[in-house]
Length: 436
Image (cartoon, rainbow, N blue to C red; front, side):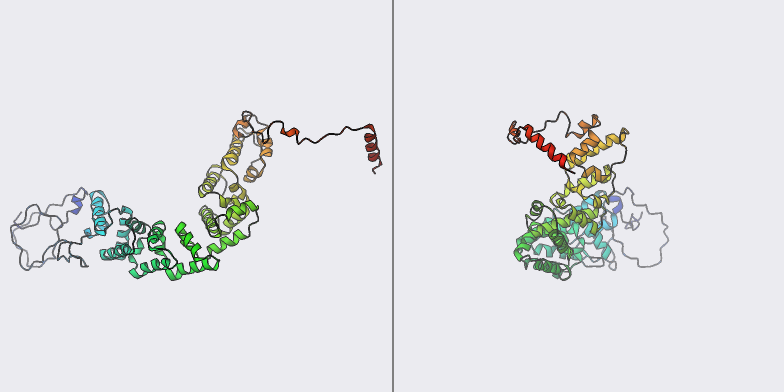
């Protein structure tokens, strides 16, 4: 090998350094025949050579300075002195091995967010590569968010959930914050709102947020009520226009017991309407259409009072364990209103035992499983089979039933008996015989 000749043949050895396992290919032997004079494109070698070359570079050769060193303009965009983003190496090399940890530390340090997650960095790199964004665009967005008072945790959440925010200009980002502040939300509360619901960054002010707040006002809610509900649950800003109106219209037309209706509206109409929206979304995720989901809630309003986790557990048990279709809820919405542990599970266990032992004549549908009274279900499926009593549990022999009244109290409510005389019996017989 001659002096001043590169041993890598113009190849970059980044793959070897970051653990790809392939060493740079050796340069083939060359003859001493002088090549024709031709200016070649400069090759940037990102690896610092072990021994500096003793041959001084020619005056007409361009300076080979890696990106990030003062005066470097080897990429299509200019980088400020000391601003090194690793050439967004993750987009070219992938996040594997040592490259992932190096890029993670490098990007988090230069973005000024030291607790940033790998998900946020990956999203930013994907958007940057897809739309050809420069690191300056990312730094500008992060700087704008910090200027608005967002904490590092909130910025990380925004970059994880809505990475497209790096394509928004500063005026749009600032406009969303100023719009919420116009409704009485303080600047110190803005960080919490965006942290709990980063999706606001994807909403426009004129086409989404302003019509939504106008709808809240048309429904009769004051600014203080709107502010209180937004701070309590920022996800209410994700309501579609007209969605809350439909939920409240359904609630106002409920025909149920007054006690259930009072429990539904205990925390106000706004929160009751949002509860309906959450349960509608849950039923739609499991396959019901919008109309059928409203039908289930209107027929069984107790579902609004149950937690989302309890409803999810009942639906999962019905579909995966009981093997009923989700459309059965439209016909038997009472299934979501009964107690899961005390009614659904014991009855299903009894039916499964009878089905396995060929003791079940006709197939039992969801309607009979749910709508039969406790005593009738016991008389039909439990009492004829003594082994089912322990499975059913409620009417088993070893279960102690607590009396509602103290012992002997029933004697007080026993009607007083009057002795019948012979004349009374004679008069009754004469009356009965006179009947046609």
